[in-house]
Image (tube, rainbow, N blue to C red):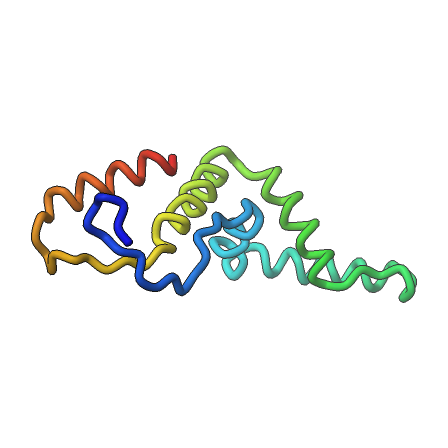
Length: 118
């Protein structure tokens, strides 16, 4: 079924869901700067908290990453938001009916779709 665009969504392998800000932040910065902070803070947490009151690592990391994101610069927050929006635009897999024809119309559609997402 087409919606007048000449494109068919034949197969959706991924859901078109925008990442949460903390998920995007983690994907962008976990290895480069967050991993070391999370590991250090979690070790301190487990060393200083009774065993029955300790949080699981994933829950602890999620809270810490959210806190770190809130403390980031506006520049980093803008990069995270751009990454989130790019992810939703890249999620749908479509196939064209015209085998490469009407490339100008396709570019116009892409631009329109991007503007709708921003």
